[in-house]
Image (cartoon, rainbow, N blue to C red; front, side, top):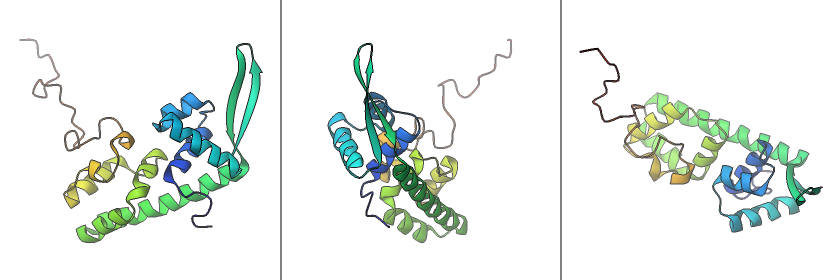
Length: 175
């Protein structure tokens, strides 16, 4: 069952967002940063595959649509997150071995999985940013900007030091 049920990384991210409690279209859209038209087609595909259930509920203000992950969808997420964890473990081993070429090759080969690794939290962001330093690349060479967590873009801030423009002194010493 390698890739037959989930061809697209975005499908899995949408499924994960729903499982994380985003049951309404707008919340899923916000959590995944996917535009409405594309999100709609992804949701239709997931429903056809039996990964999600779409329920219409009658509320005070008309009908409400709630989207839930099915057992099949939940199993799919668990399997894929397990695969992502294994890929991350492999990247970590390559990083720790200090082999730049192998790490870069592995990251190139698994480029499409990096945003999903971030979304599902299977990676250590500090180690991930150090990997980029090691191979002399920036995170944006591998990950689309909308998938990079706030404060982790580009080369600045990669050391974790947010600069307030005051030279780094945040203490009033009373002179």
